[in-house]
Image (tube, rainbow, N blue to C red; front, top):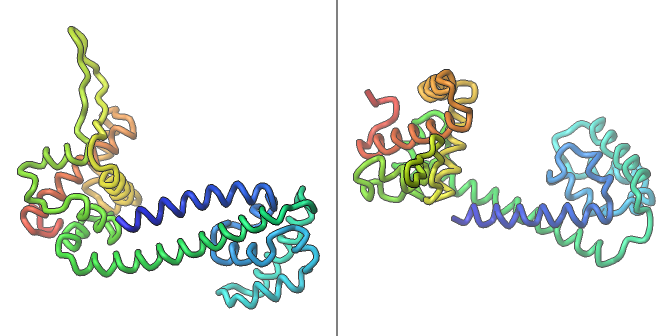
Length: 263
């Protein structure tokens, strides 16, 4: 899926960005709440070194932040500018930054901004598709499943009629238990096989997480609590919920019914 590909590239760019930032301006990250916000990256792109920050001065930095037309007060912008100056003064690399490092930093900032734009566009496309594809609409009737999760689940499952039993779908997702035995010994702790689609497992896990938080999905939250009360560890209870959720998905797709319509 295109979204996952771009996301993986974005994550790799983040890691490389962290590495080069530590070599050029490590104190920069201390003055921002979200290092990878568009404003943060644009400021760093214009003022990439502590030397550049101190040479420009607080007034120029403030003017640049205000000029970005973000939905923040001038007081917020003034605070950002002051914190950036303070970060520059603390930065250990006041001089001696190589041009190659600055080139790399600028390159990764541009890449991150581009990936953010691409992901935003893909997310918009997913939202549109999720509204158009009937199967996506059906499984979104389950509390905790939004457009992106629904699109991922449907893209991984494909035609539900490929599976003649919910256990086949569970096995496809790789959340069926794997019991290891040899001779007279059989393990008492079962692990899921993880032999199926990792993307499907991740989407299901996120759906469960969204569903049980704040009890958005009351049925699932009750099931999770019951498993915990039985003494099951949190991870085991979560896997049980994923299994339960997948059975629900199988049922409503087979019946072509909304979740709330289930008896």
